[in-house]
Length: 106
Image (cartoon, rainbow, N blue to C red):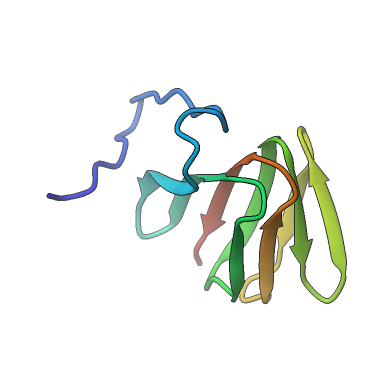
């Protein structure tokens, strides 16, 4: 079954971190220039060190995470962060968290 991505003008209600209790990613949009996804992480969940080929933004919608780059950065509900193209990073949820991830490709 193919994963559904939104089309122009189609809306989505972003999930609460309490929606299902399981960490997961929800694809929102994916084109050749832009990608958006919501990440729902339970406390203690982590995403191993990696990089993406585009410019990335992470907005913490709910909860608290620790983002590791060349330094440790705490993101809480309402915080927004920009990562340069190809910048290595990892994520660890301090408590249940919901994140909005966007990636812009050149």
